[in-house]
Image (cartoon, rainbow, N blue to C red; front, top):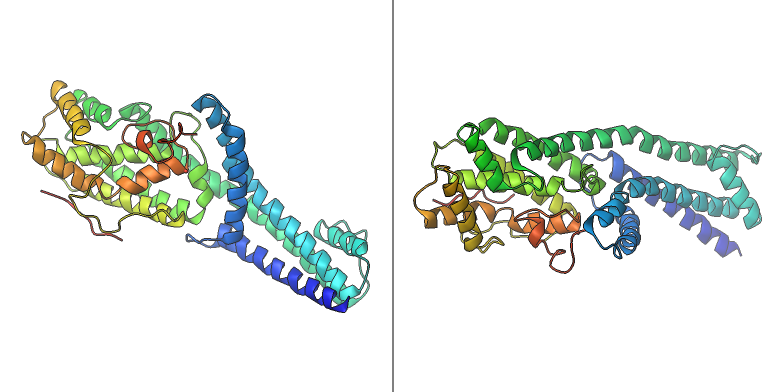
Length: 364
């Protein structure tokens, strides 16, 4: 019995350390970190939501289910942590006080929820109750204090996604975006847009690697998504550089670089494999016939295009190869809605409708 009590005390102390480490690295550490305990909770929650969403016969119904995944999981994390703290301190009290297990559970619950109906008289156990109460309150305070930060980041992200719908439609289309820009006379004055989205990509990289669940918060409009918006902006910038016969400016190029670095950083957090140093002539998911269709639509709309179609295709592919793989995989991971050249060919969509510092390259 003595050995069992000692083992229980050691296991309880280890569990407390694991919980504290998971809480700090999940919410406080300002960088992307793989937290095994947090990942197990998130994957378990994702599995349950996937089971609920799978029988739905339309994307809209699956989207309504999956919209709850990230918020519920965010609240589930501290609940699981508190449950672990409760069990861990019960084991410690059972170990150090040599009391029945039921009394240890009662004492741990009284301390964790600061109920005060059972307080030990000896100094050592009393200090443990103080530590447990402070830890429980600290975990709750951590969640409450970080919720405004999380939703502030989400709101800023979605404002840009919604603004993009004005220029590129829903779902966003790079072709539509360039045609609308040409018709309104702004096709050669898009530099402020690329600058805006460069900053947006920088912020997404910082926020979505610090708090991984942000990637799974879905847009208020089920037809929009941060990842399909990313793909549309990057493809539009690539088409502007490769196809449009207008004066060269560097802003679209720096936007692409900021974009693929951001997507790769988020992809690294989820363990997504990709070529960190792709060649300009590596294959991409967009076919040349699809590119030709877009080229023809731009010509039909009167958009000034470069006369050498083959070179334009090679230039576009040279830009796209930097973000092609990670864009498609992230679109599948977050179960993004349909959008051209991103979620329409993501790995998850090949099986079912969507509901999972390299060198800067330029050809030509």
